[in-house]
Image 1 (cartoon, rainbow, N blue to C red):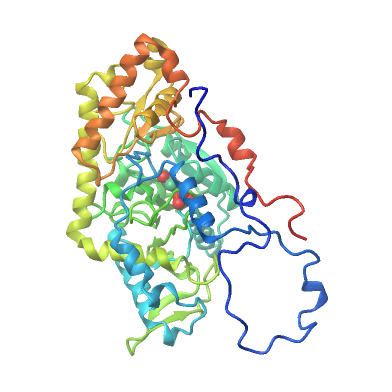
Image 2 (cartoon, helix red, strand yellow):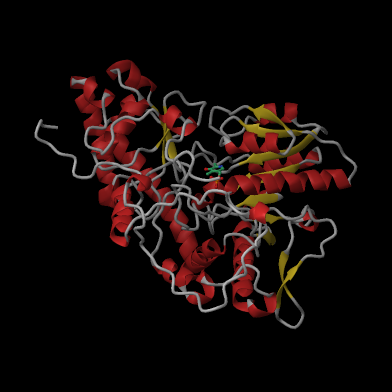
Length: 499
Ligand SMILES: *Cc1c(COP(=O)(O)O)cnc(C)c1O
């Protein structure tokens, strides 16, 4: 920046804007009698009024618009964040979610007066059951990881009812971090299973570790290496053979919708990430949903209430389920998410979903081929296999050795090319990993631009590695201390603000 440069948008918190008494909104005068003094018992009353932002509506709007422009989101550019499926969120879904009957429905509305909403949720359950090949669905879990927890609690209930004490959960070493974390939260023990040379489960290692103390195998297929495990039927036989359940981490469903189904592969439980495969906007902590679908033998333990269709055709909430693990969250789940995902499934239909998955796989393989054609894979070789499913993992180890820049440097320099970095340093078993998932909604031009940008960064680094090492150069903020950002949140209500 030159000496004369002025920052036109200095970054301030909402508390540093405005003035005492300034308001964005004035409620209408009270048109009912005011409550008598002391109506609220003393112990429930605040000693000090909360300190809230005091800003005008234009200040409020500008504050959030400025913040949004400093961020890189899916609407700013290509966002090939492997494993997380950042695909386009069709805007027509917002219209459906904003319909007053959807947006203003109270979560405690009596089922008899919420028939449309219950019908939509019942329809979504049926669609997810069909997509997964597992007919019994609960929409309750709020995220993929919450679905994992639900799945392990179901597994525990299933074994407990059979009088069995099973404590181990097998997970491959390619598993997403939420898998082992969930196992621990559910009070069970993680046992790692090795990966074979093709990027699939090492079946011999699995056989050696599968015994009557194993409660479950958690697996995603295709896995986070972008590899479809062709041994899945053999794996299912081994796991079922020792009486354990098979859990499918459905975060990679975008590769297989309408092509194959976890239920047909032998899985007992699957979670869906509606905010990944089914177009609910995500990132930045927005609401998601992680419904689960289960097989016949797991169905009796599903969370309550169940959404059911009565004999007279009406829809209802069923609370009387004696063997249920109980409730997992307040109310019925994130209803707005259900509306968007239902709209997506119904507008595409079975054929459309299959096409989405086929194009997702095609786009990933096209991008991989482009990177090969440009010589990028000489310095960033494909970690496993030759073709991929909907995503693929490159290893930046040769790039680090030859050019002296790390995968993190490459990722940061991509921001200067208007591209959000792919996932980095995951899966852990690949040195200097770069996990790329383009998704089906990107054009050939966008994929070409990405490949050209990576090739350009490598050429540039051969001349001067410092450019990538100090990147990004064109973003509102430069390189961040990511560990500190995660561990020490700084945006909070000022101290002394509330009693
Ligand atoms: C995203 C993801 C999860 C966790 O899902 P959340 O909805 O983020 O909790 C689990 N496994 C894999 C492979 C994922 O990509």
